[in-house]
Image 1 (cartoon, rainbow, N blue to C red):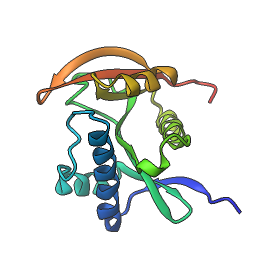
Image 2: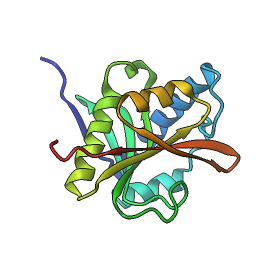
Image 3: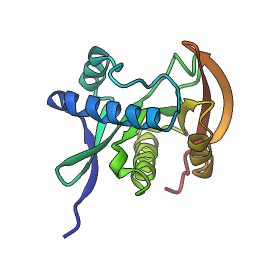
Image 4: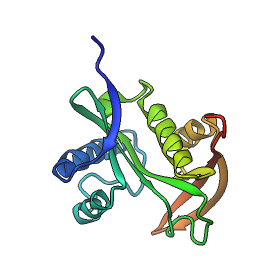
Length: 168
């Protein structure tokens, strides 16, 4: 029987697991020589504990195993200051490296789109490292449109948005 894939709100007792997923993803980026703000061991435990408490962090599970994490917020003053309240914002989308290229990232973004639509939002927005052509192509192939590049804390980020399909 195939294992069920689901995305559920992270619980406080899942903080260590979520940080492990992020660290594994960051380590994978290092092995691919993709320099950026994701550095193994650098994720703020308190920041993620606070985000979990606010209900913004989710975990992707395959059966009982946590395979990924995604943060979904209703505003993003750091990357999208003064933007209208018309979007969901995806952050820290990460999969354990053994689960890459199996469609889970797409399913997580589709989930974020559905949740954002249900919350009355018109767009799904995200940012990524501007120098990472592979991830930029991935988002563009999924219908995200490049909006701008910004420099945040010495890193250049590309901002993307996707119009949420009203028929979904």
